[in-house]
Image (cartoon, rainbow, N blue to C red; front, top):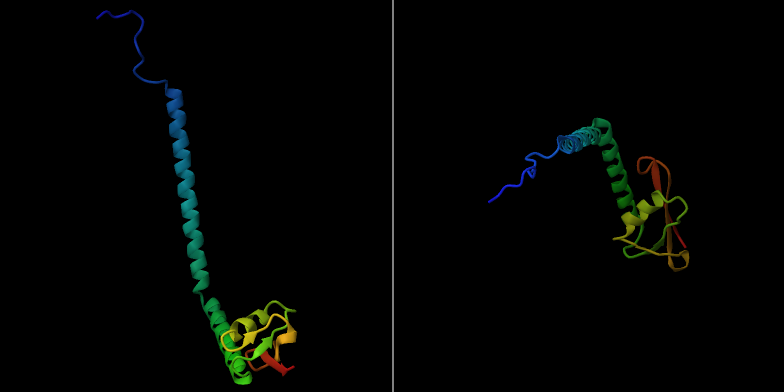
Amino acid sequence: MHRVPGSRAPLDPPSAPRTAKLLGCAAVCAISVSALGLGVHHALQETAANIGKQSVSLAAANDSQEECIYHAIRSRLPKGAPIYVPDYAHGNEVRVNDLATLWAVPQPGISTAKWVVSLVRGRECEGLRLKVRRR
């Protein structure tokens, strides 16, 4: 075997691309760790807010109000009654529709309903009152 002079292959690649690759990997790792840390911090803050005293009392008040509306619907409407819930507020009317669904039958229009049901301000259910009128 003859060796050709000057054909020696380099043993190490140039160090500039290797250094750039290492710096790039370090930057990606640092950004990933930072994002993970911020995500954990945010999740802990959200959890603390959701189990805080004010949040729990608001959720309990909302549950109590919905239970009151649920019982009012069942005490004032016959089972299977076709009802119409006016769609002018998109808030409380959605709650009435949801809470009445298994007891009454919400109708898409007033023409097929025998009852009109809505929530108005009152003292019956913690600031609300169920208004029911026969058509």
